Length: 411
Image (cartoon, rainbow, N blue to C red; front, side, top):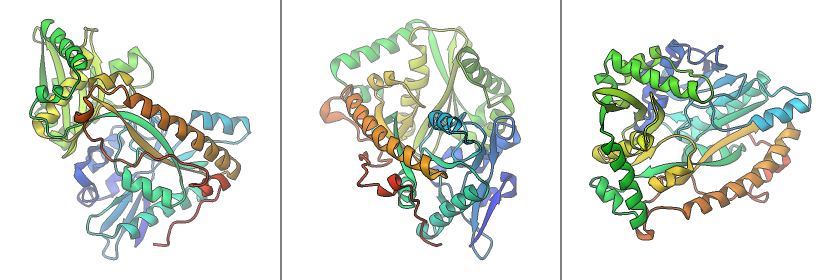
């Protein structure tokens, strides 16, 4: 195998890269990642410097890859390690730069270690992990982080000796609902009544909704979506890192995978949500509005998305990070995972000890949140099995406590 680190995605053949992406997962398609680079959404300005790892066979064909970035900040990651960075600073050490395998600004669970479907995973994945570790050591990165990993990658990273970190989001699962009413029939009477009242309030205000895919979107639609996206950052916090050029490019290149939901009042779009889809899942990412209207956020960002999933037979809806208010609307707490390697042995031990305690607390919190489920006990949909919800203990993870990071098997 030939392994390289590539700093420009344009140097990788799009067709070969996309052959690695299962389920047409939108955020790892060549079109999405390249659009980030082409429109300066990543790079020096925002501290995401591409260093993608590729693995080719003897014929020069791409058989494995992972998206890797060198970071000089922790912005846009959604797995918060600011306390770790502060502890490094207090000790007189530098936490940045660090290496991150993630999708910029996108807290969506999915594959991070890509392998062509006709190749042996147990040969390619260890090579990807070891290359990332060697790169991190050689370039003096403080740490290496894999964010929002799916079940298979989480297990592979655990087997390679990285520390696992548990968190959670709120996801909606579709067991095969016929329509929205069929979905509501799974609710208890009180929760069903509350949700219907929210939807009715939106209709009583006179709202209608328009769903536009990327290949159907006009220039005006893209400008509106960009405005709504940026307006939320202007009102609250943070920096709008995506721009109109990015949305224009992915609308043209990704087509049906970009889903725009516009709320209209008196013939005028007053709010909008930006979503992406794979073959089996919908991912809610951004929302914005001109003015605040009662229950409009819930309808635009959640109920319209649920309607879309039922109509298109998508099995999963991830509406984005945070928000316990999602539980009463049918989104249940779902484990999410990340994996971490810390170069400094002393900090490695401290972080390992912290993660054991944090994992226990997060697991207990997930169990408490689950008790607020709006579903009848016998009609609760089965959650996606991203990774078993297990408690990490010192006995189960002695390598985390000792600071040893075993090397993965030789490729």
